[in-house]
Length: 439
Image 1 (cartoon, one colour):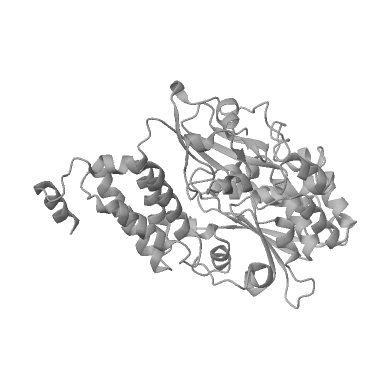
Image 2 (spheres, rainbow, N blue to C red):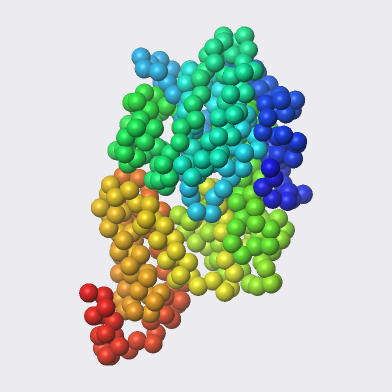
């Protein structure tokens, strides 16, 4: 099941089996170096496995970009409690769809990455928490798990190695909030999916208050290639501090939307025009969201020759996030685009934190008023202040995810907000009528 027409500019590491017949089956996987990395890892010490992952400069592909090897090293070597491996497959960020195609086309790559993580930290049980709307994907992944058990790659004494590991697929219920790691753990334990206070972090007190490795699907999928080919090989595919390849999800105003595997640091202009085939109708580029809807928007000028890695995007005050690259052409109404984003975050707020619960509601209402032409000029500054006061004041980053794009849209496209209100004269009957509508 292909995700889009492949591009000759791709560097295929995680997606190299996608074009093989029956790529999701264990027989195809075993015929193409499948589980060889696990067998190599069995002969390595846990510290050596973690060392290779550190050398690879693999950073978490779920959004935050934290170094994976360092994260694994935080798990205590000795523990009276069991240790767990948890996979965040609750892919819900608007603009992002990479984990889905990885699990559809090569689920055993994910299983092998989980097994290697288990070896690295001394875990014998893993859970894959899959987005509730991916019901079909849960069915497909459970087939892969059954195949792995049948062929001896899961269960007791895995293929004579003496290593035991069990794996369970678990369905979410469709909450975006459960993509946040601590809310995911709460949900996995059967409780309401709301965020925890941290510290302690999952590496020390995660699932059932036990040491837990929790990473995104794409992150685990990169691990077999790292162990099989070496950490330095993977690091050299990308840029300094940003190793390997990245699954970029191109959507919006683009001729060839899809998911493409490209080296970290790949030029954004080339990504849009050479990989994605450019903008329909040869329209001009207006803006790009570089990593999913929670990331600050970039203007066309900021996109020029931008290396798409965590550090380069951070330098221009945005984020690589989850790899959801949303392209917007010159016809895009930026007020309406921001309103659509805010409707999502207001709907998905779990309501646990007042700044997020109330802030997203206020922002949605004010953005709606501006878009409909019944706002007042002071709404723009008020929206900016509300968003600024949400930043860093919630248990999890959902409040930040709503605030950061709001701030960037207003800062970079304020003229469009003002234009929708320009027909209103301060103190006029029209403004008074609109004020009445706001009550």
